[in-house]
Amino acid sequence: MLLQINEPNTGAQKPEITARAVGIDLGTTNSVVAVWQNGKAEVLQDDIGPLFMPSVISTSMGDLHSTKRMMHQPTTIISDNHTALTAAQDILKRLKKRAENALGHEIHQAVITVPAYFDDTARQATKDAASLAGLEVLRLINEPTAAALAYGLDTGKEGIFAVYDLGGGTFDVSILCMRKGVFQVLATGGHTQLGGDDIDALISSHFGWTDSLKARQAKETLSQGLNEELLNTLCEPLIKQTLAICDQTIKDAGITKNQIDGVILVGGSTKLQTVRILVKNFFEQDPFTNLDPDCVVAYGAALQAHQLTFGTDTLLLDVTPISLGIETIGGIVEVIIPRNSPIPIRMAQDFTTYENGQTAISIHVVQGEREFVKDCRSLAQFSLTGIPPMLAGAARIRLTFSVDADGLLTVSAKEQTTGMIQKVEVKPSYGLSTEDYTLMLQQAYKHGAEDLNNRLLIAARIKAQQLVTQLESALSLDADLLDEDQINALKVCVWDVKQTLETQDRASIQKACDTLALLAQPFAEKRIAHAIKQKFQHQTI
Image (cartoon, rainbow, N blue to C red; front, side, top):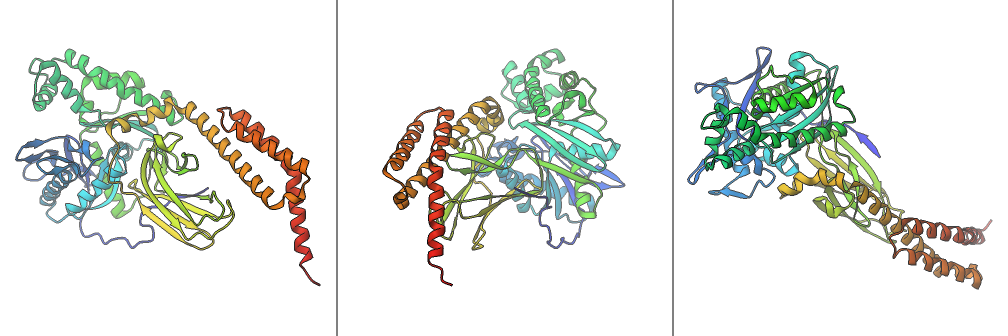
């Protein structure tokens, strides 16, 4: 397996910077624009006020809220011909216009933040929305990573940090290691449908309200009959869900809680006293609160925008949150890029053909944490043709996965002898359902042992079938090298292997294969000797 790390568009000429790039936190509830100026990141201000704008779209059928939650299905009509993509486009247009008014010149480039658990569809939709709004996306950056970047550069701290990001619509947690200017994400976790909106829904349900804005106002001001004790009671189960995700993410990072040097709070929902108390108790330390949790993500994006346009000594290593791989024989997933791999990244692995004379290979790209394709998400399918006819296992097909700094995937397949190549850029036309996405990692942990046992069983069957096929083919060609008793002994052993293939006993399959391989070894040696003799008989001196 090969490993190479590259920034996206490596080798391409860097575009000329004609205007200052901004950092945009495209949030579920509110969106913020910040810029690096006066030696620090600042939220822009125009004649209306700070560029802290509700992420709301006005339509003929009323206001649309929290459209970011639909970015994994960007072309689905939400209301009045609006989709999540067009809603994001409209919000970004308004942010761009206000930012230009604040700065006094046009803006063409931005770093935009996304939840760590946004899939490829949602990330690509965010880039498309920005492009339609007239913005070149220098980089998409995960929201927890942006917050850690802001805190790391502002305070000069080093160590291992947890970023707890509870926004209006999503929850993310990241474990990061900060050392000597390198910010590396060790692990990330999250929930795409858990945030302040869900707390508002619980409040509305308790009081029988139909207006979520009324619930949000009551939450923020502790009015309308909602007191702190009742708010704590209503939202505590949701916060405990986030802490369970934190616990698993810490395990994924290969550390313990006592190794965490600090906890960074991100997102407006972390202003709630209940959240801060429960987070403090879980991590057994006071979280950092010296930067506004509503703005810290935009600060980090502004820092990254400044670094990408003017250079920096700081290296930011983000990760891909879900494993990427391909389907192999038996419906088994072969992982090419494991989850929590630093990005940008390029990894390659060699594969071969399964059948004699095979001239094409179908490549099925999948995403997920389970051992079988049926339990993972299909991303793309394409075919590599023009493979020279060879014996099974002789061809060499190099499959390369490239994930750029925005988390977007390109897959290419190349046949090594002919140079034939096919490539696909993964821009799925659909996203995960809420249920599938939420349960993906939970199901992987729950069924891990069962999946592995089933995978090993199928792999043993495939190996046994290949052995049987190869031996039967050899017997059809060179049976005259054996006497009748030897041929019958091999056929009986082949029959034994075929019988074990009908069972669920991997040990029996392996034992039968070992017996057959041992019995067939003299036959294989005779075939090799015969082939050498034939070759020399046809040579002349």
